[in-house]
Amino acid sequence: MNSSSLTIFFSSVGHAFMHMFAAFYFVIVISIEQKWNFSYDELITLWTLGALLVGLGALPAGWLSDRWSRSSMMVIMFIGMGLSSILCGLSDEKFLLFIGLSLLGLSCSIYHPVGIAWVVNASNKKGRALGINGIFGGIGIGSGAFIAGLLIKYFDWKIAFIFPGIISLIIGIILFFCIINNLISFENIRSKNLKDENSSNNLIIIASIMLFSMFGLGLTFQIMQTSIPKVFDIRIENLSTFEIGSIIGVIYSIAGLMTLVGGLMADKFSLKKIYVIGIAAQGPCFFCIAYFTGLPLIIVCLIVAMFNSSILPTENILLAKFTPEKHHGLIYGCKFIVAFGSAPIAVFLISKIYEQTQEFTNLFYISSILMILVTLAVIFLPVKKQKLNFIN
Image 1 (tube, rainbow, N blue to C red):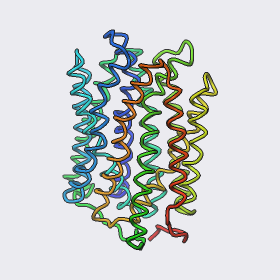
Image 2 (image 1 turned 45 degrees about the horizontal axis):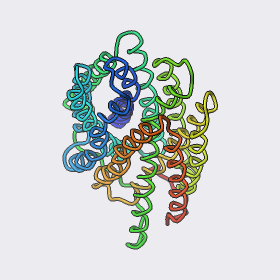
Image 3 (image 1 turned 180 degrees about the vertical axis):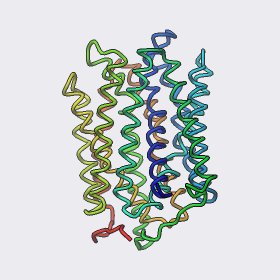
């Protein structure tokens, strides 16, 4: 296996683990709610700082990776996530769990600005590579819910934190040895086949639209990922924590496959058309989630997750085209400050709406309206129409 293949492999595993660690608390919290006798809205707010740090930590992580080493930053991510998750599992009161979750969020922040730039600059067929990488992100979100539910069913919520943490530590150590044995480059690989000339005015328009789009997509993603376990718990009768985790696992695993489809399409078709259609389709889906129960609720959650995943390669290629390679980590850091920085807003909305209504209907009204506004903005994105070819 060459250095490029190993890079894609470890980046994909890192993508899965990052999303797993960022998502499994939303299932684990249901078990803690029963064990500690605290309300759901109290416990879910413990993730607020961690969720904020997933976004805020992305900028310094991207900046440092541009100037130092993306592969070494990935080692730090794996080890940091492992230690933080183990700390969460050893917690016996709210404050210690809050500290563990906050450190976990900071560790998770490393992945997107570092791992995406790592893949973009190590591969020739960038849409396909990002699509493969994106599949693992979907698997991570889904497996986080499934693995948490499985470990809670057969052990307890503490093991649901500790066991994945140990695995992450081991992977970080393996990656470290790959780097020191020159199987993976310590130095950053540079890509020469990403370039798109735009006027200053166009770049300002592009930046404004992309920032708004990434914020809207990030907020709705965080709203769904955080709230959907509790939505299933409320609206579908007689579901155990394990069954909820399994359903969510299937949803995000299938959605992850759509990232590959979206990546292959991004190598062949108009980036703007793919982006607009993928965003526009989510508006009606969120409106349906506001009302649906039972099997229809599960199906529409799957559909919105599929559309959300399908446009990720397109979005990442657009950002890479508009940015010099030496700043790719930085620009992806900016993206994920915007996207994941919306997570505390999502947690606040979820907590307050649930506290006042014991339901989430208004939450998904907000998501639907936001997707409509983002669609209208992205229509005006001044992207060139030529067919893109990223093969050297």
